[in-house]
Image 1 (cartoon, one colour):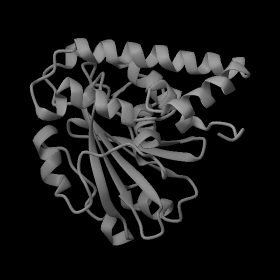
Image 2 (cartoon, one colour):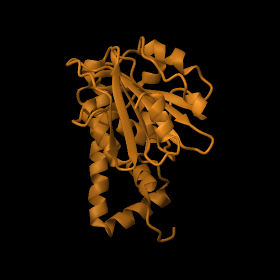
Image 3 (cartoon, rainbow, N blue to C red):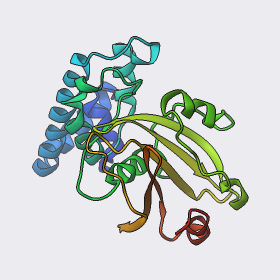
Image 4 (cartoon, helix red, strand yellow):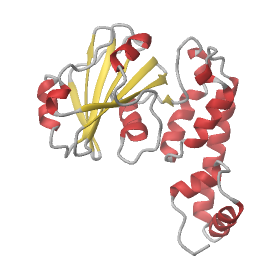
Length: 248
């Protein structure tokens, strides 16, 4: 094994016990010489253990996708940043109250910024290079899929006019209830996500608004019984056209 520095994928694979013995010894030797990184990896281990314990104790409806072994497999496959794991953990501790929802294995934290959960979902599932799986694939009928979980929720009708096609969708769990993420992509690989969730018990509806999160632009609004957000890179060449299409 050469002396190169392990990347985050290597470290997450180490946490998930997915490395072969040789690579595991290599990572352990590197961590022994980098105490700061060792502390970071140990925190990941604790987060992952607590998340698995919380999910294992949650009473979720019976379905093949919700089988504990299936969930653990998907958790091991999801080697993302500590931020995403911590965000999932905060709500996973209270996921028992969501037992009636047809949700999957990600929970998003309640935050002060409008639709910050939409930004977290983009970074985890829609960002280019993300290895996280979607529940539907390209060519699937996303509208029919969405109607099974979020009744009367609407999707933007004209994004295909801008050369954007559906890559897939993901069902999520939030403190406000079941949420859906739909990912779009153009021929150049630029992506945006469309996020839908209920306003929660406090009925926190949103005015039309937008804000910047680093390199991401989030536009949000409420319509009917749902809050919506579109997240894309602020340098996306179609960002202004998408805004006009959505009434911004």
